[in-house]
Image 1 (spheres, one colour):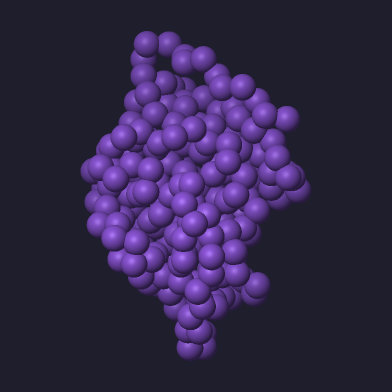
Image 2: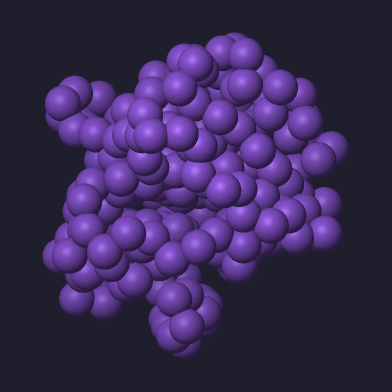
Length: 215
């Protein structure tokens, strides 16, 4: 897909809606997608890897899906933790519209689909799940992660999926050097050419035990 569509606030051309069948949170669902957004035909491989290798989210609190697209991660979080508030964040207005349509169709009232600047600055997150938009470029990606990851609650985790051939290992090193000293970064899983990175904001009571690496 052209990056003009993928990263545009308002993709060119009229939206052409389509219905696809997906499996999220252990359920077979029908969702709506459209042209001009990320992976409108299916749940992309990176997101599949993230969803397969990330522990169940906390039962409540504020959650963040950064770069939500049409919403596979946000919908999963909302289905698995109905008492949480899920912030589905993207710059693409068409993608946000798809998230809202899908949340309404599934009866999910706990998703806020919005642009980054519309998330209140005092909101801290119990967890962050993201298939971040690597192709926006290193500077923009770094700025994005530097802004959002420090907003993790103490004792909480962020989970990021990144393709190995798109710099997952260099991003791992950059995060470890860039984030505050009470954050740690580890590789949680490797699958289908992707790494799942776990970013932990320590609680001040010492490190928790790392989860097993999946080869």
